[in-house]
Every structure is written in C-alpha cells, then in structure tokens.
Length: 344
Image 1 (cartoon, helix red, strand yellow):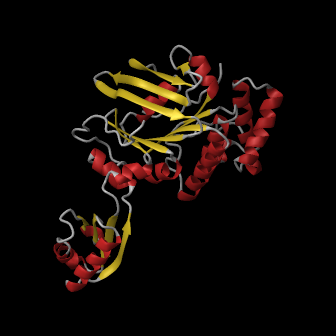
Image 2 (tube, rainbow, N blue to C red):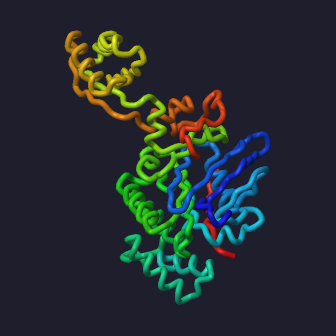
Image 3 (cartoon, rainbow, N blue to C red):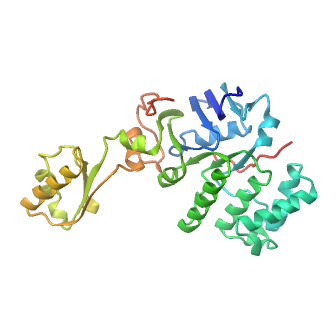
C-alpha cells in the first residue's frame, strides 16, 4: 500500500473454491481509513469465506488481499497483529470469568500481564460488563457474551475490526447496543468491515455497501445510491378491505402499471415519478373509486427492495439469482468462523 493510499483493506480479484463449489469468483473491494464497509448478501454468498481470507484463516486460490498493506498470505503474522475479528457466534471460554477471558486475550497478544489486566478492567467498564466481571461466561446472556467477544477482539486496540454477522440471534435491544458501540469505535478511528444479512444494520452503520451473491460483487455504493437505482421515491398504501386491492390497482393504472401488490397485507407500492404530485393524484383516483385507505405515504425504496431487485430473492433466503449478470457499478467513482485473531 503506497503512502498516499487511504485503503486499509484491499481485495484484488480473489477466487476461492471448495471442490466444485466456487465460493468467491473474482471479488474486488477496498475499505478506507475510518470507514464502515458493509458486505451484504444471503447465506452462501461468500461473505464468511472472504472474512476468513482477510483474517488469514484461508488462502485464496487466486488474487490477493491486503490489510494495512500486509499480504494475508505472505505477511499473515503482521495481518493478525492489526485486526480484531468477531465471528457469527461469540467465541468465549465459558469456564472462565469475563475478566479472565479478557486478560487471557490480552496475554495472547503479548500485552504483558499488568497491561492486560488494566485493559481488561477498562473494557469491562466500557462494554457494560463490570458488574458481571467475576462471573463465569457460561452464566452470561447471549447479548453479554457478544459484548465480551467484541471487547476481547478489541483488547489489542486494532486499527481494523472485522465483524462477521455480529448481531445474529440477538434481541433488538442488544442489537441496538452493539450498533451504538460500533459507531463509537468508528468515531474513534477504527476501520470496520461488516458482513450482515440485516438490511437495517447495513443502512444504519455503513458508509458504503457492497452486495455479493453467487461469490460475485453485483452492486456497490452508498445506501442512498443503491436505493436510487430503483427509480427514486415510491408510494405505499394499505387498504382497509382486501376486496379493494384489485379495484385500487385498476384505479391507479393511469399513474403506473408497475404496482407491486402484497395481498396478504393489503399493501400496494408504486413508483412516485413526480413525488408529491403523484401522491395527490393517487389519492384523487382512489377516492373516485370509493376505495377505503388505512394508510398512505411516500418514501424511498428500502434496502430489502434493492436486494430483491438485484438478486431475485430476499436477503435472508438460501439461494441466488439465476443470472447475477456480473458486477454492476452503482458508484460512479470508484461457512461460519468462531476463531479470533491474535498477534503471534
């Protein structure tokens, strides 16, 4: 990495196969200093394979990956010294207390016993675990284990943090807490690569998003840029009576013949090509058709809709689009692992 470059993570044409299964098919990406890059994709898309390559747990079959200028194959020890890794499941020793887990991790990264103790105490306070510090991790809730796992990943104060689906299985309140912690770390200068299936998580945390499917990058950009690819604002309305769905769709044909219908929820979505003027026209047409409306409004497309349009399936489902069609540049410029990295 040149002195002028701000890219902390660089992935160039990375391929990885497991037998006949091609997990990664030429992935390219960069993550800049102090940035959160979200890697978004369904199960089996290749996200965790890429994480394991970046954390030196796998070697690519072709291409190269670098973290802080260090090659993940030839400079593996140096890479491990600059990253923290939190996998999909909290990797803590349940027989140890929270404090002992953190002190052990500190010694793994050669902090020295005194410094490991000091940082462990600080991390327990920072992550809201001080009251449970002397309890075995086996008594912790799922959210507490996740916080302990994240604290252990950060005990060496790495400049790069890799979060592989960090909020999988957590309740909404704990998920919000972890989002707040991640945002605070970024404000303090940490660079984050985040893999996720939670579209709201990517929307909330990421400066940029890369959508991966079938082992290929199929779109990249900010959340707003990706949403803008669907054609701007949409009108969404919910009807009072399910029997009115077909009537409402017919009534709004002068505005659009591209309405999306969710009959189960009595919801209709259509493009708002002229913004509020389209909304006013829709209200007039629906009133003329004597359709009763429970709710109507204008909004931007969601990341769920973006993902469905790009891949042909919902983000949480197994499978992939029949033909991803290669990479689609939206930005004009331009298996689970529980191991945690430790310095040699």
